Length: 362
Image (cartoon, rainbow, N blue to C red):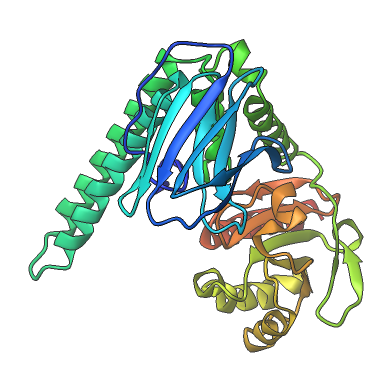
């Protein structure tokens, strides 16, 4: 089950829309903050862009300026410890930060973002409540799971209805873009198709379009993107140069115990199908060479292993739009995608089917 992805840092408890104006003014109070410097940073492109710097005195501050269009931004102390996200537009904002979170008032887009956030918060609250009840003796786990499923479906439907009601607003496309890394292709595409042209033309709209285009490059029948990685011994290899009738590209991480759950079965699969032309290429999304190398040995991964040691920031993970671990892509001898998005048991059945067909052809 996938949660609605609304990762926006501090909880946005409420917001009030205000009229458009020539510029913006952000007035705020941060409880317990020492005098220092506060930065206003646009967070829309590949690199953060500092829009303004202001001194904080007795926890209070005021930013003024002007933007050409709404933009995702955040406030952060100069030391980078913490941030307050908001959608910046030409409006008056009032921000009050305390131990309870951040109260943001002002801005049409901020108000809409808060509506999306409340949907997510409602689902997470129900999920937490069910989890607590599930720990009680005699809990009806099946009934509790049904409640979670029902709450999840309600949150999805409420989100879709809000998207439909505001298809061209920046906050709408911003929320959808936040979910790129945790959304299924089907879910992402269905939400994108609800957007208007103005929303699609924004920076987050273009990010969503690029992700969907990349999904298209990973479709069954397409040539899988090539990559070159270092092996544990420091030598390199390229995916397309690995000779095999079938290649199973396997994404995992030594540091994530749950992602190693299939490794024992992968060894059995490799020993069974290696004589029939299977090669496994495991891509570790780790950043610790020693941990990765040790796990390869402990788990008996005797096939091709590689990593760029960038963890989940790996360019290969982005290239293959990997969100969950483990993840698999089955390729043929011409490096075309045969299957993807399958769990290991389904892939085992697929390999059995493919090898039977190949044997008949031979």
